[in-house]
Structure formats: structure tokens, C-alpha cells
Length: 240
Ligand code: UDP
Image (tube, rainbow, N blue to C red):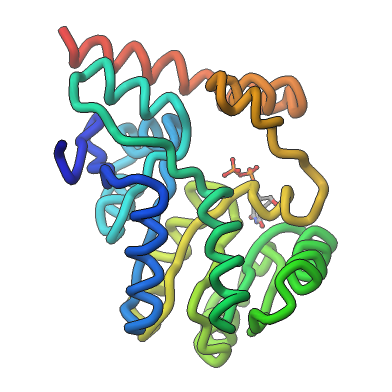
């Protein structure tokens, strides 16, 4: 099985969920700076149509397959990917490991209330991790100040929840100034951590229908979700 699988120009890491977690833990233990993109079909399509964003995503150390659309595409192209590695699952597992290892966490993003609630829930559920700092995701004009604050927090993991493409752009434009830390765009995961949005029940996830659950819960997402059929059309073109 290939170590990386290319889907419409995006090179996905082809490792199981546990292997990815192990890889990231090792890098945290060694203090190796790491940029992770959890890419779904929307991100792949956006990267395809936007040169600047594509370059940013391609700079990442690891791009993991967030979403069953990516797994399906890999299957259609006869280059199967082992399994889904979602941003939310990765976040939860890393928080658990942070709790065991007393890692330092920084949570950037969400509305002020959401960020506060997420921090409170994390501190309650994972009392041994160090909440090294947090800030809401609306900080226009204070870009450098926030980056300095994160540097001072000396975080092992910086979760960046600004939604795509903003979160990857933010990571990329400040990455060079950091000397350590896992930097990962986690989008709407912060809303789930804050208890404001529910993750699809496991049965829906197993049936690969998480996207449908999200659409039913947040119908305003329908326009963005049109990326999914467009993505599949592109995959079928490549297949031919
Ligand atoms: N967000 C933010 N700053 C922004 C735009 C969005 O902090 O400038 C937050 C938003 O409040 C939400 C999270 O990013 O908590 C995820 O947004 P969205 O659902 O659009 O992202 P996705 O999950 O699709 O990446």
C-alpha cells in the first residue's frame, strides 16, 4: 500500500488513525514543529481552484483524509486509503494524550463564548493538560499580537479553529516564526467541543452519512456542500 495517495493534486498521508496519532505524539515528544491539514472534498476543491491556498496546503507536513468522500475517491481511483482520519477524532485523541502527558495546549478560534465554553469543557474533561492559552477567532488587526501570545504560551499543540481556508492561511503565514508545536486547523470541531453542535451519531458516521447529518442540522451549509458532487465529477473524469 502506498504511503501517500494523490487525490486531485493533494497528497494524502495513507496511514491508519492510530499510526497518525503515534506519528504526531513522537513529534511532540521531540519538539518537532508540524503543520497538519485535515482535508475534506471541500478543501480539495477549493485548493484546486485557488493557487495560493493549494500552495499552503502542499506546504503541510501531513494532509489527512477528513471525510468519507476522500476515501470513496481513493477507492474509485484504485489507490485506496486506509481509513478516515477526521479533525475531530484527532483533536479528541490528542487532548486525551495531552492529559496523560501534561502537554501544553492553545485554542485559537470560535466566537468569544464558544471559545470560552470549549476551554471550560476541555479543562473539566482533561484536568491534567496545561491550557497554555486561548483566544477567540475574530482578531483582525491583532494578528501579530496573537502570534506573539501563542509563542509565549510555548504550546505543544495549537488548535486553530477559524474555518477553512482562513485557518490554514493563518498557520502558514505565522509558521516560520514558531519553533515548536503541532499546528492543526480544526474548523467546526470547536463548536462541538463547546457543546454547541453535536457530532453525527456513530451509526450515521459508519454509514458514511455524516455529511448528510450536518446538512440536516445546519441547512445553511448546503451551498458549500455542492463541492461534494463537483468533487466526485472531477474524480470520475480522472478515472476515465
Ligand atoms: N471562525 C472564527 N473566525 C473566523 C471565521 C470562523 O473563529 O473568522 C470560527 C467559527 O466561529 C466556528 C469555526 O470557525 O466556530 C468553524 O467555522 P465553519 O463551520 O465555517 O468551518 P468548517 O468546520 O467548515 O471548517
